[in-house]
Image (cartoon, rainbow, N blue to C red; front, side, top):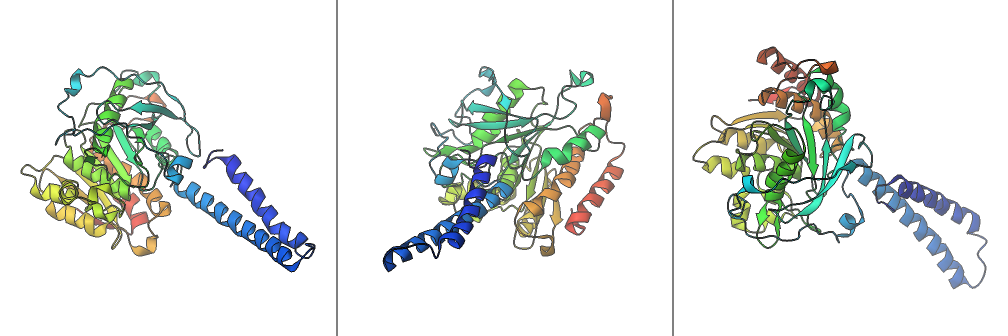
Length: 407
């Protein structure tokens, strides 16, 4: 029975109801020695408490997409087949353009918010990772007017622990963005959500760590190649971006800063720069690896500032200070768009990040210079003016974030 499935949830609800009724019906009807009566009543209380805790956990897990299956929860899942030393660029000296095309079979994904999402199991030829990847195509993709059109792509990264399905389920990304893509208010992005929880009980920090995991190469090489080989997508870096929240936000910025040849933009919600921001991060265990995966240090020490754009939002002591540090270390052509979110807006959870999906993707549409697609398959068009689009973006942002914006 699936951890996140409806049958398991309904089973827990029924068991919880039974656990409440049992003491009311049987408390005074248990006969026998006092020790036996006491033991029976204690078992009923423990059963009630256990079902209550389990039900609350499942409700919280489903709302926040923390654990996707029993293997993730129990720490028995391992999606790394090998983790060779791939060098500084994460390729291991492999000529990526000479690799054969990766042809994948896709099936409809299941779960809350997964309508229209397709799933595939990808064996990363470079990274050695074997894990699922979810892909959602914008409304225009199958329209006749766009049969020769190549679409931009955004990789979506969850927090830790977190499910690759979270952006479609808990974050409601496709439900929010699809009508805006259809009307031309947001560019028609292909959304790709690869698994990031690759090892049991630890956060990979989206890093390459020899003999342990090559998460960076999985996300920035294997997954993009698979998408390029199976769909009509724009080439990197012009048509590629990455977005994340919490630990995924750290990864998004780090990937864009470290690989401006693979991504041109990143969205970060409540992220951090130093990998130690996640206490279970593998990247924080070694001082050298920790520094190599700190986007603030990468920007500060870069001899040639990368041509990337960053959207970084956060609250005081939860991402804002990291965002300002990035802004202060950035030099042209790097641009950093900082969004201040007051503490009154909520805490470190989906309710805070979900309303940021639309304004961040409006920003992304402008920064990436993507053509907006009109509804009903009309010819794609460019935004009428950067000024008017930025004004709309600012309006959308301020309604949720308190208009705190720095550039």
